[in-house]
Image (cartoon, rainbow, N blue to C red; front, top):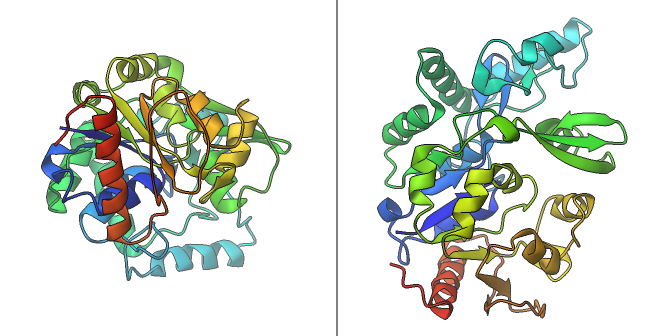
Length: 334
């Protein structure tokens, strides 16, 4: 068994072509939940859903979020009503007292449905309604995610990193923002001062997540700060990675990032925005997969290949390099 850590789009792109190398039923994905938000009364789990939709054959592979061919009639009507009422179209946080009351798993990240700033498709919203209802019935996020995976016919186990709330808060020159406000609404425009993983000091990885971290672990080419940072902020999760073989795929080619704000975020956390900075952020990683054009010298074994991911064939190529990296550290994987 091999366990993948999933956040953003990097790991789902890698998993898309992994089947000939790693059997899905023996390759669980542990997903970041720091990006989750409560919006319009429902809990949205973007990183979990990207894996669910991709593995279930539903994902829009042009945008790498949402359901392919989905309609957005409900979202459009919410925005129309908001505009007609003269209300702000931007993110509207619920009052401070509401952030820590109500649904515990949504703590620190609760937004009003007025001015719905994330475009939720109609079928996509049905997933969130079902998830939220099951949570309100007393199920854990782990249990709910398993139920949704079964309903979508997945072979791959999909696990949230924790059943406790952790929120990625980006502190900027314009004040603190949840990562979804910073990235989706503001398009990463504000200057980053620091990143906080609110609630991580009180959160614990689930027993299910810790169990699969006993296996060799693959960190896909995800954002080291916002996709992996919430996981690593939990002491027990980080300790588990220090005790198991880990191969990481860099999201950089030297100092060029494939996509997203990983460079600015790494710099804001005191790391060089480059493959060198990723290696410093992952001291527990035993080997790395780097791009053919990445000449970075590391103090750990390196396997090089073309790491750009788009088609399933790309994922297959990089997964083969991942397996080679495990062999370089004398770890046999299937």
